[in-house]
Image (cartoon, rainbow, N blue to C red; front, side, top):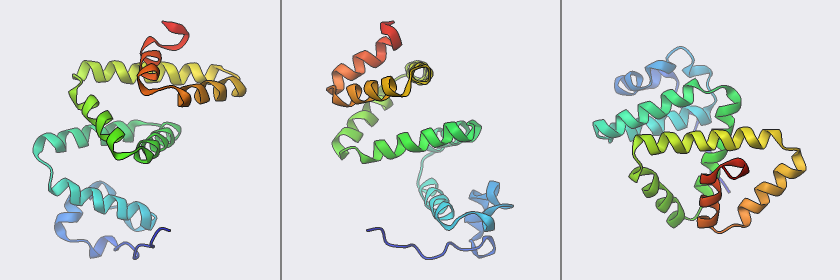
Length: 154
């Protein structure tokens, strides 16, 4: 059971510091749903405690998210929710693996993901679901190898 949050503050009720951090939302803040405003406030609080390198990475991710079309954003949110549903040890293992990658390796991983997503869209729904189920049944190492070889084995 999720505990309801108090209504999010109006723009005029935010501290000067929070308004500065959330400036891109100044015009739309009061029309955003409470849940989104609470998420943005939590992000602003995390931002205050980040070192400059972490802030740069966060800014890069935010820009990438902002450049996505609504469908891509929905998929990104879905992936995030699946990631959050993983056991903490698995999340940490994946996070460490990602952090250990060079920028080039990360870009290659994003490109593989894009190719897989495009491939899945070409499949009939029943085949798509069968492949997803097969992937869910695989052990992580086997799944990683398959994902790295790409759709169609190459």
